[in-house]
Image 1 (cartoon, rainbow, N blue to C red):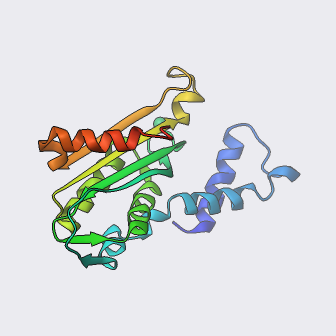
Image 2 (image 1 turned 90 degrees about the horizontal axis):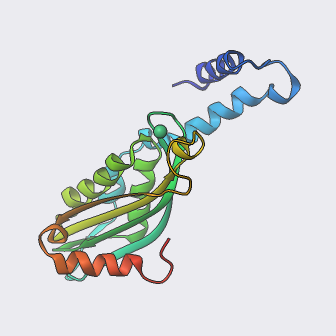
Length: 189
Ligand SMILES: [Zn+2]
C-alpha cells in the first residue's frame, strides 16, 4: 500500500474517533502512523524461503539445536493491536543446518505481518520442516495480547502459549520433554 493513501486513511481515522487532525500535536501523526504500520508489516515484502535457503549448509550433526527466549512483536489480525512475547525454536537436523541468526530472521518475517498467534507458530515450524528436512521441529510462543489486556477481555497478565511439534518432537515424548526442560530452564518467562 502506498504511504500516501495510508496517511490519508489515518487522517480519516483521527477524524472518525472525534479528533481534529489539524491540531498541532496531530499534524504529523498520519505520516508517523503510516511509517510505523509499514515497518510493522514489512514481513509481507519478504520471502521466508529466501531467508532460510541462503544460509543452509550440509553438516553431520544430529543433536537438538535450540534458540530460546527470542523476543518477537506482532500485530493481531482481528484488532491490529500488538501481541508480543518470546519465541523458542528448536530442530534436530538430519543432514542440513541453518545459521542460528536465520531462525531469528524467520520468526521476524512471519511476525511482521497481521497474525494470529496459532498461525505464526505453525508457519515457523512448517517452513523449517519443509526447507531443512530435519528429524523434527518444535516451536513454542508465549505472548500477551494487548487486544485482550487493553480491552479487559481476559484476566490481566494472562499469557497465551502456543506450540507446534513436528517429526520426532511429536512422536517421541522424551525429545519433547528435553526441549520443554531446556525452554523452561533458568530465565523462563
Ligand atoms: Zn486481537
